Length: 249
Image (cartoon, rainbow, N blue to C red):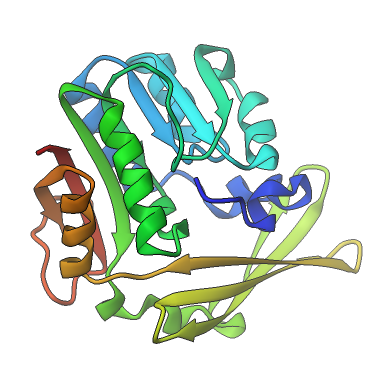
């Protein structure tokens, strides 16, 4: 992956991630895909390892790669972590000298690549790790849906109870740059029982479907399917998601 933003690399933020990002339909999609593909799995941008551990326990061997030490620390501590090979690494330059039936990037991890060059480098790295007949799957938000408009402090405020930390409130605020497609996000966590807070920052990029298709082609891959949501509905101009399944061209 690209160098980790502080909300992923810093343990103080990584320890909060799962509480605000539980299992969701996207995880069901990739879990089912792993079962269908069979064989070894490469999780690029594995984060806290929730999906990687579930697949490794139930389906197939998994290698999890992430540049963020904070996230990997969380991943190594969860049940089933001993069944996964954890690697701190950059998806753009990864070369494990191995091949996988399924490679995926979940949770919009593809959007951390902020330039075309970085995106193509990551896609090429994935391509060289695909086994014959293997599948690369990833998701990225459709910029036409303008998800960033809802990423305001008022609209995103959520409170959860976290063991050892008490009640924690998360909110985000966002500045979107139309020219680059990059959303700069400020993440605020308020520890309500301690009257303290911590603030972190991240950036992600939105690209449209035509540009995405061009990047995939430039990496020596072809799109086999593109869905507009996790239930397999077709993409439309207003789809919230691009859920892409690709293979070697």
